Length: 147
Image 1: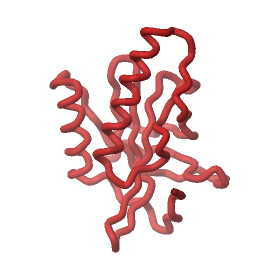
Image 2: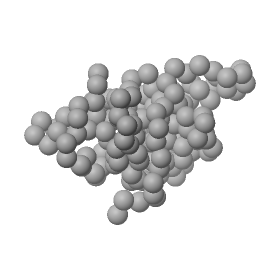
Image 3: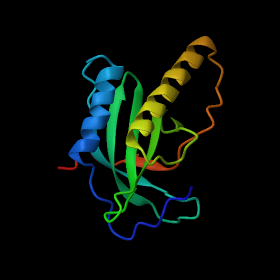
């Protein structure tokens, strides 16, 4: 599925979106204090794009791993939204799910956390590079807060 062209700025992350992600993190990390924060990221939304698009996102860290879930599209009339996710350990080692975008934020965050957990498990069992089939696109975290 291709990301539709967003002609207007993508609306900021809502309180409900933050609550959903934070609730999932609290459950996954059992209250270990992992906190998502709002940031802006720049993404190449399509391989054909020459320019990066600034997207509102949620960012958090757990151990040496960093996570991003970006809102890449929102239609104010229909409420349709699309999300992109990745986790990374360094600029050269970043991974995403095989789904390039999700319509459901809950599926997006759960699948991202599962993929990262599987990646860590495989790295522990086999320190050789693992093909995770989802190297992420170009993205840059621009700042710690959007406020």
